Image 1 (cartoon, rainbow, N blue to C red):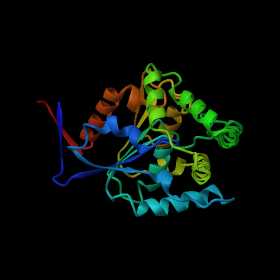
Image 2: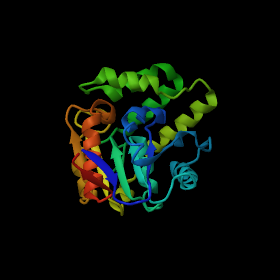
Image 3: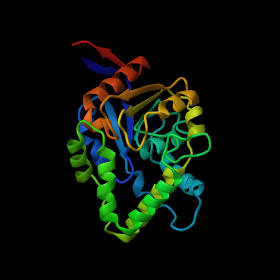
Length: 262
């Protein structure tokens, strides 16, 4: 089966990676998409954030302002993990054609009425430990992301090859500021999304429990939601073909792509 654009103008596909990973982790997954889309990988984790005691809402606003100057309007937004959170903040502002999130939680940290997430204590402990021992915690985070996957070794290899380099103290300080953004609450953005939305989850994800799916459906009943069997936090690595099928079917359903049998 092949696909062609339903519109004559090239479609913009904007990709936002997860915390701690370079956008190059998507290269293999996107290799078959370049003929159909104009792909932009946004390295949003390189946007300089204020260092200090700024509240996370100020950090969020700072990042949004920077991204509104970089991301094309009416694009398809594809975000993984923290990248999905960031994409949800700008989707309506940029009149996105579609919003696609992989292994994403609108609230990664538990809040009142939102229990299928990390506890604040676990989140704070991770941030403190990461600051104290970067190398050890990077390896632990890589293991956690791949835990539960039927293809864990493949995922660990991809994460190792595309992990951020935090040897520079200034880069580490920035990373910790971006980590704080995981504490943001995007439930309102999810509920108010005005574009077609596809949300994909891993059945065995240790960071985004599949139980959150019912909560997400309650917030946005119009979103298309799919849980990938045997996947963990990187379904686009471990089950790339299945995720590709899901994305193509969704875009065809929305008349963004027209699927044709060869």
